[in-house]
Image 1 (tube, rainbow, N blue to C red):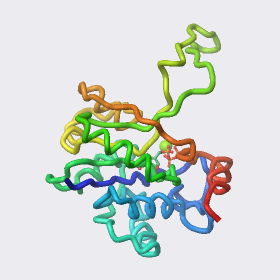
Image 2 (image 1 turned 30 degrees about the vertical axis):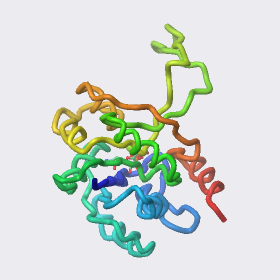
Image 3 (image 1 turned 180 degrees about the horizontal axis):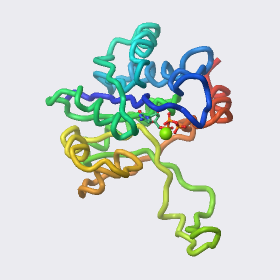
Length: 223
Ligand code: CTP
Ligand code: MG
């Protein structure tokens, strides 16, 4: 059973405000992309990797793969305007015989092997997909403008991270439809009635959005 990884790295990183795409921001002296790519490449669970790179940053992406001596990078494709477009374009490079696809954000550099294991193990238990989740610490309310209209039952809510794993055919079918407003890959699968398992995530999978996040993740890197 071949497991393919799609690494979504094609974003601009506007909120980080660097002079280059976020995947090439410096993290511990290397491009941010190197961290998640190295972890995917080193994972016992992953066979092949497709990188969705920002336009005009395809070559530098290949160089990052060479620098870390990655052996599983199958191809680098040019990403699209939105994250889901980038994932759709990367999926086109995943062959028909792939059994499972794991989609990960390059913006989450610290990718623990046990989270990869948890989401992929769920596929063997007959789920269509699996997502890493974290409990919410804060009370969550729905607002309209500045008026609080509802307090949601927190114990039924979780925050969702990547990597997200799916049966390859299920993910392909989900991406064949309308991509206009998905918040993640799983939401497309859920919308088609797919059964997605929530598994424990990891706080270290923090998504780097701004400078503060970058500094925090950097402080968590192994020396
Ligand atoms: N992504 C992508 N293609 C896009 C937009 C986003 O592959 N057109 C990827 C990013 O590279 C990132 C992940 O999706 O790994 C999550 O996106 P986000 O954190 O929003 O990153 P950016 O879009 O790069 O950041 P910003 O929104 O601040 O520009
Ligand atoms: Mg974005």
